[in-house]
Length: 103
Image 1 (cartoon, rainbow, N blue to C red):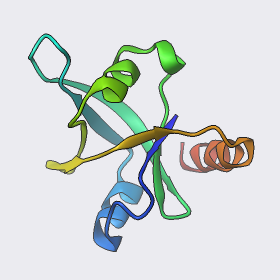
Image 2 (image 1 turned 180 degrees about the vertical axis):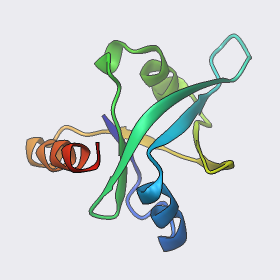
Image 3 (image 1 turned 135 degrees about the horizontal axis):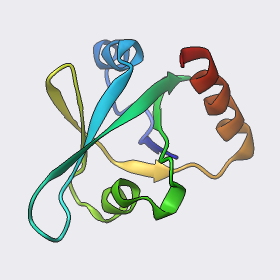
Image 4 (image 1 turned 45 degrees about the vertical axis):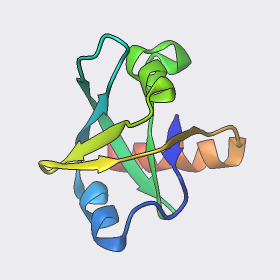
């Protein structure tokens, strides 16, 4: 699970991401070809969260961590991001609840 830096998105963008069920994560692996992976997204407490089904071993997760310029694509618009793994158990629990409410 990761979250962009605090306050990375303005209120309008947070609204778009809140209302969006699926986004594409865009990565640029060493192969040079960009890739997009469709995933679920939640906004909780003003922060944007995504989860990798395969955890830290998932391809897109590894690529986001290694990529200098990952982005999310929502409603046809590209948003550059900086993903940070979440370690705090209370935060993870809040995000889990947000996923359960949304999906």
